[in-house]
Length: 273
Image 1 (cartoon, rainbow, N blue to C red):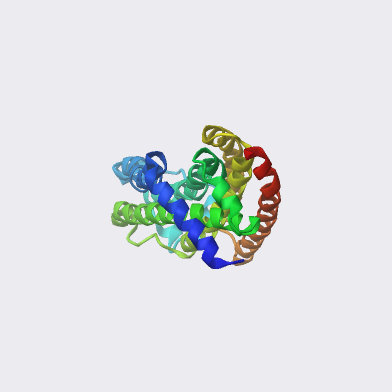
Image 2 (cartoon, helix red, strand yellow; image 1 turned 90 degrees about the horizontal axis):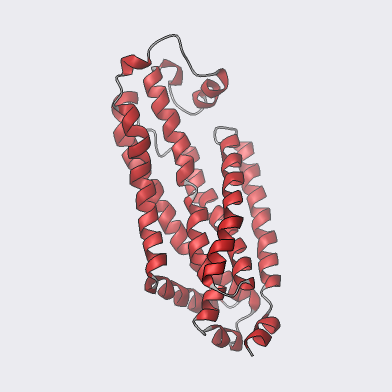
């Protein structure tokens, strides 16, 4: 692959994103909503409750205590109010990790079909760039704003969450090992999977609107499946994390091959003639 050609196409796509009010507002607005509204709406009401109201004979089930005891220092010594705040902080952090799937569903919808609508696909197909380079460039151009949005949302969420719950738990909760792994490793990998799926859809449909609509139907089940999988090993062993990363890497390679095969240069040229 010729990296100079790939980067030229990536820069062109990034410029197109800045011209789209819809894409630009999503890249900026959605991360701020996730970073600010999620912790304030979920944690602030609990933080304002009198800790004494949580005291009593009730306690969390053993499996909850076992999960958090292996992750949070002095979990068993914390009162019920502090434990509730920590549990909600982690569960809502999973919602923030949906961003690597949501943002690419917006940006990648503009990739192939957007080129068709803007009448710029002819120039790309006439250039010496290969199908593999085109798909790789489209993945990269959608991945960059997704990673940016995820970092902004995750960083803001961690800061606000720590400020809200520190007075009650006496320690900084984020960032920890697992949150760093999810943001730096799983986040980009989830983005790539979402982008590859959207590129395949964008290649087949005739308009950006169709790409948005069909993409939403495809990505939503993916969100629930991946979030369910992340929750299952969120507090598990290093071996499970490594296995999850390896599984995601295999899925990425398979989807890349499929996306490259679906984007057929000859068929695309015939459709536009």
